Length: 132
Image 1 (cartoon, one colour):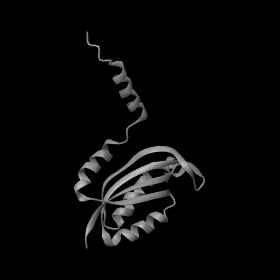
Image 2 (tube, one colour):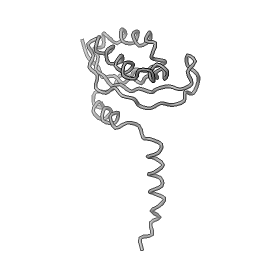
Image 3 (tube, rainbow, N blue to C red):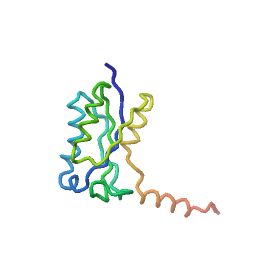
Image 4 (cartoon, one colour):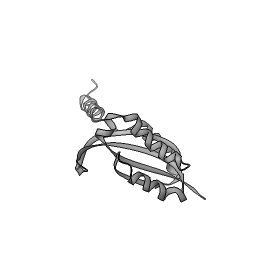
C-alpha cells in the first residue's frame, strides 16, 4: 500500500462557510483523517467571484489543502468530497514528492494580495533611478 501527497483546491459555499468557518474547514481535515490521511496544510486561500454560477452561488471560498493519503483510499475520499454539501467544487492533484516542501511552504505563505502587489508597483515607480 503506497502513500502519495495530494493538493486539493476546494470552492466552498460562502453562505455555509460564513455561518461557521471552523466547522466547515475542520470537516475537510476530519474527512481526510478518517481515511488514515495526514494533513500538512489546510487554509483559506481567498474569497472571490466565480466565473459562472455554481448551485446558485456567485462567490466562492477557495480553500487549499495538502495531505498524505494511501492510494487505495483515494476513491473513498473523492466520493466523500462529492457528497459534502459545503463543497461546491474541488480538484485533487497528486504531487511529486520532490516538490512537497516547496509547495507546502508556498501555501503557508498565502496568496499575493492585490494591495501588496499595488504597493510593490508604487515602490518601483517611485524610485526612478536618479540618485543625485
